Image (cartoon, rainbow, N blue to C red; front, side, top):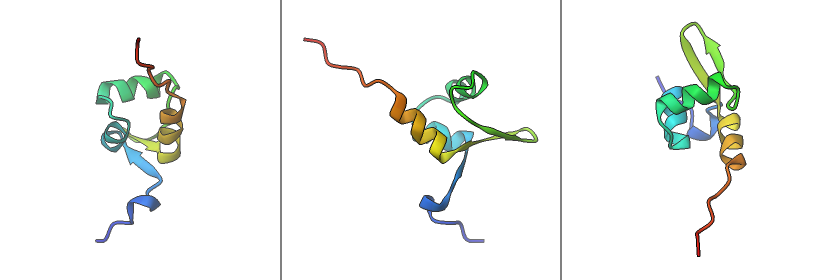
Length: 67
């Protein structure tokens, strides 16, 4: 079985989302349950749309260095 190129993947597993967002699994689940991160539930599995994860990254404030 061949896998699609990474650019074609539109749904991420929670494990993939944690790697992309560089967050813990627990934090990603909290974001999903608080509706701060969109996700789709299929049975017991959760999938995060790749675009939603990227949008979440863009909404984060970047900490400014202190003088």
